[in-house]
Length: 72
Image (cartoon, rainbow, N blue to C red; front, side, top):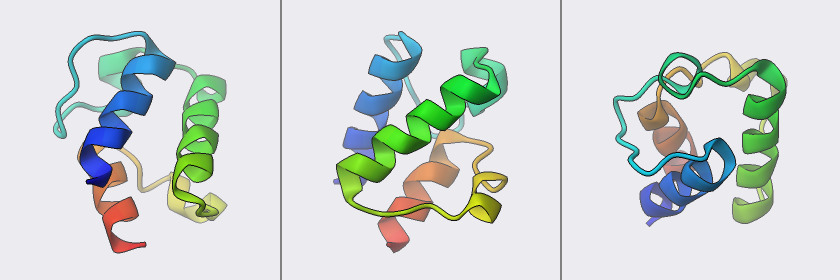
């Protein structure tokens, strides 16, 4: 399932132990734009999908990312 893999990527990239779909990417993980972009690149590589720049703004919560990849 994409959800578990996305959670794993977040844990590794952001250095955290717990992830839930309602967590906000920037606020709850205290990441900057570069780290968020690196996460997106990790996810693109894992799922072999290219994320359009305009779609990045839609990634507010972990659940947003999960939903995006479940639709791909």
